[in-house]
Length: 127
Image (spheres, rainbow, N blue to C red):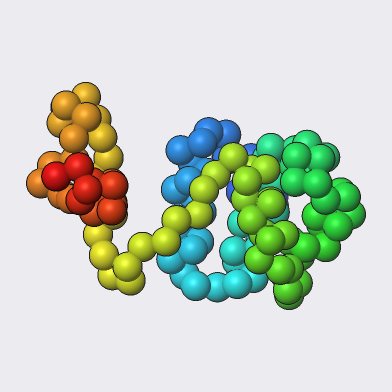
């Protein structure tokens, strides 16, 4: 008697914003372009391809083509898809630790960290 396995579909487990963010962060950390496109496709399927296509301004077929492994979509296409998925991509210094989140425990402050707003020119003028 042989054991049968069903194919694993990550889209079935991407049922919350937190799960999606964690998934994307792990995929981005690999630096694999095809895996990144595949992850965007997984998230789009979890949220509904037609809805994501409409929200991004792309045709459904164009969305499938843009997210296919081996595709070379432009930056603005990816930016539209990411925005339609309801997530943000952020830039950080390579190797830097993530900034602490504001929580009720810290009173809305990041513990001992200088935030970007504290470094802004507007802050310097006010000081």
